[in-house]
Amino acid sequence: MPKIFENKIEEYSKHVLPIEKFQLFSDIGKLQLNDKTTSSILAIAEEYLQKEYQPILAHSYMRFEKNGNRNIYEDEYFERRVMVWYLFLGEYIEKSGRFLEKLIDGIWLILDECSWVIPAHTKVRIEYIPKLPLQYKNEVDIVDLFSAETGAMLSLISYLGKEFLDGITPIIRDRILYEVRRRVISPYLNYNDFWWMGYTRKNINNWCPWIASNVLAACALVESEMETRCAITKKSMEILDHFTRMYHDDGGCDEGPNYWTVAGASYFDCLEVLYDITGGYVDVFNHPFIQNLGEYIVKFCINIDKNYYINFADSGPCVRINKNLIRRFGRRTNSKMLQQFGTNCEETNLSIQMRYTLYRSLKNLFEEENLSHHHERIHEYPLQTWFEGIEVMAVRESSLNHSGFFFAMKGGHNRESHNHNDVGHFLIYDNGEPLIIDVGVGTYCADTFNENRYKIWTMKSCYHNLPSFNDIDQMNGFKFHADNVRYNPELKRLSMDLKNAYPGESDLVRFSRTGQLEKGIIRIKDEIELKKEGTVKFHFMVVEKPQYIEKGILQLSMERNLYYDPELDFSLDEIKIEDSKIINNWKRDTVYRIILKAEKIQKRNFDFSFQ
Image (cartoon, rainbow, N blue to C red; front, side, top):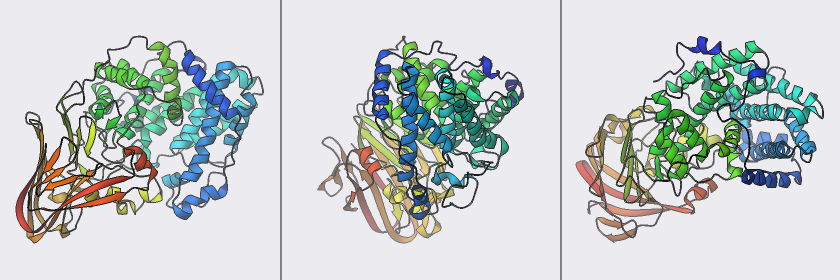
């Protein structure tokens, strides 16, 4: 549970620079875009120049309270911000006035919005979902992910667009400062009871560094009052220490690699802003935990060519990681692993970069010109990794490419951030392609984060690679966990007791699972004992329809089979996917669930092998 700033917060906060001495992205020197990036930005800005801003209507906001749909309102909300951002970049590049009028219209529309908080996030401080936003009052008392993001975006525009905005009227930047203070900076300072700050709740997640990075950036860029600049800096370091108390020294992120981009990577963003706002005085990049926090994303990578990652929790299987972010993370932490991995990462499409984390995205664009030294392109991964804090093992046959088996297995508990009921779950890839999968999560809606979460099929343990006992599945909560988790690096083996991952109605006396990669074979051994004879159903999730060869053998791919006890009864569920997010993740609208059933079982061992 590393606390990077503990005992130094007062010292560090004394070195905050006044706004006139602050330098944005001070470690990369000249802020210059290359010709390719410039052309791409201008092309997108020209498209938005021909497009009209759409109204954001009250009934769109109320839709979430009515039926849990967040998409319609959020699509309108984010589209407006993306338009403004690209029009700003176009004007910043040209400074010709071509994009200026439409840019100012967009800025003013955002400044006039009743609230920057999206409807799905209004319960940050209140216990109910209002039909319409409450933030029309003089004092704003909610800061969410995207109000902070909006504040950072407008602050970047104000800071970098001073010359051409003030050339029209200083009222624009003055109004930006007023609204950023009112909607972001003041509530951030005035309240300690936001759950994501960690003062009132121990378990916090990506919200903490994601919001802190944007508030820090906004403060650094537009806040002129030194007392406020110091207070924001001090409080941010406090809550960042609250965030890292959730971590083990190995840097493992229980939210998965998709959320690492706004958890560990946003924490890194905070360190970069703290470095700039103190003129380099706060420089903690050499701390071993920071390097581990970055290298997590390499160790969780299955196949960089297709962006496959271990996708436990709400993370999707495919994650796009910006190469400049990773190389910079490596440069600042002296991690060769990260710098090489960043070189292997593909170019990220501009439209993908420019929706969230705009401080980072802009720095990534500027840094392209400053990364002239390229590390050799190699595909070298750790042969095995063990994250003790989150109890995840990852082992592979080859370190130089993704040939052969990749096997990951987890212990943990069912109260992890973005948790699925999946203690003891595993996944297998073969030659970089999915064999036994974690389906992932669907499009977010109200039920994803309320009392109905574990009624969603993708959250249930029976739709993970886990058994049910007497049709009883795992339940959510800290008390449903793995015990006696033991990792053996020499044998590439993970074992654990899983009785306490299931409720008492399951009649479990004992359930121990061992997973091992041995000589090109993945073996799963389950030792089961029930109070009396009952039914056991084993489940395995796959993307390709398996072929039944004979009792005890299923063909999973052209090269790999699943071997199991021939006394188990085989059946297959074909699951038609209607959710666009899952369809996009797996590039198909159907997945399959293998069910292997045993009846009248009281005490027995079951062996499964993939070879």
